[in-house]
Amino acid sequence: MPSLLSVNVGMPRDVSWQGRTVHTGVWKEPVSGPVMVRRLNIDGDGQGDRAGHGGEQRAVLVYQVQSYRYWQEHFRRNDFVHGEFGENLTVDGLGDAEVCIGDRYAIGEAEFEVTQPRVTCYRVGMRVGEPELPALLVSHHRPGFYMRVIREGHIQAGDPITKTRTGPGPLSVADADALLYLPHRDPDELRLALSIPALSPGWRNSFHDLLADADRGTAAPGPTWTGFRPLHVDEVVAENSFVTSLYLSSPDGTPLPEVRAGQYLTLRLPSVAQPAPVRSYSLSSTPVDGRYRISVKHEPHGTVSGYLTTRAHPGELLDAAAPRGEFVLTDGSEPVVLVSAGIGLTPVLAILHELAAHHREREVWWIHGARRPEEHPLTTEAHDLVTSLPHGHEHIYYSLAAPRDRHGGGFSYGRLTADILTALSLPADAIAYLCGPAVFMADMRQALESAGIEADRIHVEAFSPLPSTNPGVTPRSAVSPHQPAGAPGTGPQVSFARSGISTPFPDDRRSLLELAEACDVPTRWSCRTGVCHTCATPLLSGTVTYEPEPLESPPPGEALICCARPDDDIVLDM
Image (cartoon, rainbow, N blue to C red; front, top):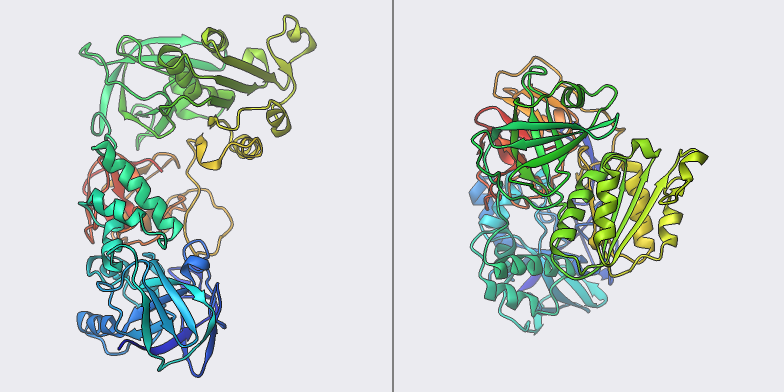
């Protein structure tokens, strides 16, 4: 009969790791005697990062002594102690290949239900001293699992473990873990997982998304060309004194590939500086006659924007990476709300073109803020598109418009604020697209949520680096991206397009993630071993080699920077 060998608890602590401080509860120590298990936790236990650990669905983590013996042999170690793998309950039996999601077990006075496998996380590797362990837990099918508490009560080492109910579907912990993290998923198995009531909401959402991808039959398409290719500048049009549009075509005259409204184009300009600066600009219309259009604001100290708005000329060739981006119009019949400020107009203008051409039956709201009419580019074009729509609504706000500018109507005087947006009575079932300065987008996003639009229906576009996702790492004061400390590297050139940093790959860095961290480029990661894909980043040009090899390859045109090194000069969209 399975039995409980040890109850392990530990409160979160600050741990020094790779020059940073991690707040973590992964250090667990055995306790003697009866311990009270409660709905959300075991007395004396805590989690440093509640986003991925703890809570009702993850109240107790279980790991098996059989897996301890397996890893002792694998790592040729004999120093593991109970709690070493961050688990609350070290058990004899209950193998991951045998226990199923939804199974229930009685231990002492308490009863538990299995909800999900362990969340793959770098901290277990940090605790054990084996950085590759998160990937190995998945690839060797020994993750361990979480349980929720059905009945509170005391438990202690030595208690027998009795199965009180078998889950409704034969989905083992090991199979559920592989279903999320490994390739070649079976849609029927995804449907089985979704039919199990005990499955935690987080894993349910992930399986729902995977099934939706499987039902579509194909993965999301990759970029329409690899690396950078030359595009011909056909026309240069000054929209006003601040913004210039460039019309780009294929040098051989063939139509450029179709794009999705709202995507962006990335340009590399070796003639401006070395290493060549890289910048991204939204396409400001859908393709016309097989050409692309970008509309660029001349920033006062912008080297690239200055070149494009004052020196670029017809007949010139510009290096461009294929259009990318997820800020795109989705299919459906629900209302569409477009909120923009300043040059943030450009991607929503492309979406307006798409709506006017192919989705005229949808209700469309366009809300835009600018300083003055003369600083509002492409005004007539946007106005004509909105007014051509049977259910179009237009609201323009000029924060610094002079009284004489107000004659004739067509706009409101004053800055576009969250209160104004909320007062417009926007449809709560709308899908929203938001682009503009960072502070503006933060305010408007909150206002849209206050208007009743669900957070996952609000799409945001920003060309600054994405916010960091570094679970458990104590935040530090923000530092602008910079060259790494020490002597320059001798490896291939690595360019972080959003951060404006280009540097040779150093000899002492194991991955692109480590280089980004050394440059204080904002990073997004969780497992650091190629499992979770949190670090997946658009690879605009170049190729990479993986070490370790990820358990599942990223989509075409992306790289898992946590375990990737450059083969040649590369450009990353970060």
